[in-house]
Structures are given as structure tokens and as C-alpha cells.
Length: 322
Image (cartoon, rainbow, N blue to C red; front, side, top):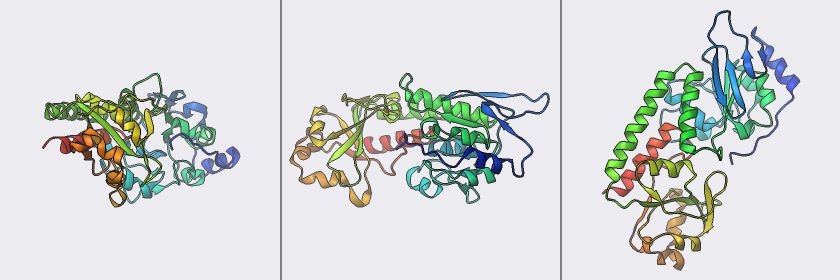
């Protein structure tokens, strides 16, 4: 769901809107012209270096991950995408302010609304923004991070991206403090999880509630790397897609070792794993027989920043440590 990006509007219309009420013109990747003597900031995103004339103070976020991270940095975004759904999916960290404007969906942000906010920075996902980044750059400098670079570990990317975002909004010290807090949370979780059995699998229903298949987080995924950082070991060895996920049938779960701790999330109103009580393959799995299945609740956002990472650790400890 992170990969699609829809081209919206025309460059001409957006440039016209962006120029209304603003005396600062944007230009290419470098963004607005800086005042004489001002210290410029260079951010590395998924397309290369982005030069900002100064720390951004009026930011529009087009991805939940960066909305969460801005809030963790103490920055109230001027606008966000999919505001109404954010609280349903991202349950960690501060909530979005009532004053923050909804700028449309993550896949189809409203360029006119974004331009009307006169942001000095737009932040989003590189894959999602690939088709309309030029239109967005006509409004304000754009930082488009790539979270699933196959050449890099997703946990390392998350930490680096958070630090880069902190730099972009002049919150370097706050970013360092939050990341240090995550390190403390990892160490605490590692201590608490010692002796509970290190092998785990993490899954959620595939294809919606009631589906007969499941999606499992493989080792390349951010969620897996967070838990492994805390001393656990991902027991799932199946093939994964570019996001680090494997979508498999219940039968494929027979490949998991008998002593695995099976962590999962599922809608409370329609729990797929509860419905598998009548599935002989599922009920015959050794870890199911041993009641080593654990539901995480509230559901962590598995593609988030430090706040969501800490929440996943907290949920894992709460589930496994009795």
C-alpha cells in the first residue's frame, strides 16, 4: 500500500497557487532562496541531497511515519495526509492537533490545499511521491525519504531518517534525545525478555479480516529488526518481498519451530486467528497446542518511527513476560 503514487493536477496550476500570497519562490531541489549569510541545511533523501535555506517551521507531512516523527520531535505539522485515519492506525506517541489541516490522502494529496498552507517543507515517502514530486516542489522544498532501500537495514534507515528530519526542522538535539530513549527502551526490553524463549514470529491477517492467509514479518522488515535488537530471534525463514514481508497459507506455518512464540495482530471484532480454531492445520501446530500465541493490543504501526518502535517493544514484553 506504500508503493502507489498518483499524479495530481498540473504543474502550471500548482505553481500559480503556490505563488499566491508568498514572496519566496522555490527553485528545483534547493527550495527557497536563503537570506544573505543564512546557514543552509542539506538533507539526504531518497532522491539525493535537498538543500534548505533554514530549519523548516511550517511543515506538511504526506506520510504517517513522518507525521508520527514530527510529533515526537515536538513539531505540530501545518497539514497532514489521511488525518482522520491516523489515530486508528498509529496509536503511539502524541496525537495530531485539531488545528492541523487534512490535505487529502497519502496516495492522492490535494495540491491546492497544500499550496494554501504556504509550507516551507513537504515531507513524504519517495515511492509514493515519485510521480508528482515536481508538482510538489513547485509549492515548497520536498524531502522524500525511502524507507525500504534493499541495500540498507530498515531499522538503520528509520533511525537515520528520524535524525535527518530532526535536522530539517532544527530539532537535532530533540532527535538525539528520542533516539537515546529508544536505545534505553531496547535495553530494558532485552533484559525483561531474557529467559522467555528467544524465537518469535510476527504476523497479521492477509487480505483483510477473515482471510485464510497470513502475512509474516521476515528478517529484513523493520518490525523484525526492532524485536531482534531486543535479543529475540526471528524464526521465520521464508522468502520475503521488498518490504520484508511474506504472505503465506496457514499450512506454511508448519515450517516454524515448535518452541516459537507466535505474536500477531488482528481486528478485535473479527479476529482471524480466533476463527482458525476450526482449522486442523492451525490447531495441530505445536506452538498453538502449547498456547504460545500472543495478540498485541493496541496494534503497533509497523512502519513507523521511534514511538512506534518503543510501542512494539512494550507490547512484546507485555505479551511474553508473565
